Length: 174
Image (cartoon, rainbow, N blue to C red; front, side, top):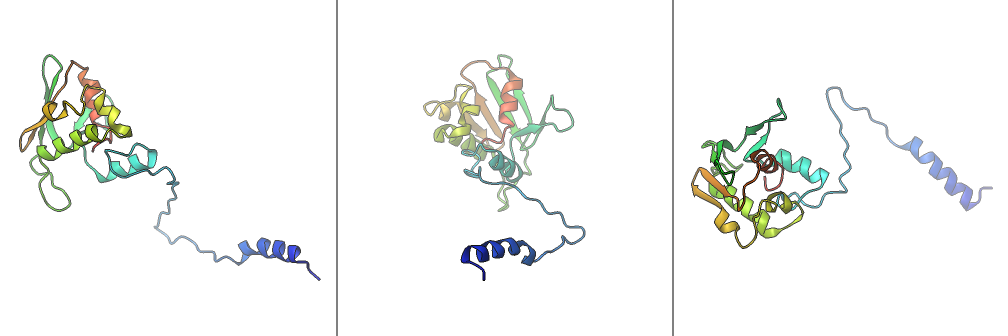
């Protein structure tokens, strides 16, 4: 006669053999991901690995790293940009055909809102933008859309253009 303990152990040991086994159909890829680090999918707030992977696939940025040449920056929402000779003014010219999922055009005003919001919320990824001198007190003056397709970032002090551009290509604010 089995004791309750022996019956419980025998039942637990038999469970894996009773589970249904299914094969993945041909042509189907199954992926698993640990997602316990998700904090938020808001690009002004998220800075964890999984958040960044998802945000990078959901949101576009002004500029992105060039996948063919890691030493270069490539256009995304901004089709081109200029840096002032004194390295304090970064002017981005947005593509005219970018659209949100709703069909509404993406404008420089939208980019202005996103970048200002990063500074104003001051969540984990904000340091990527605030390290250039943007604060809650000056962001309205220093990050501005001058028209529907032009965004100007006025830095309080000169910065290396490559550093600023690579930081702007990060997922923060998307």
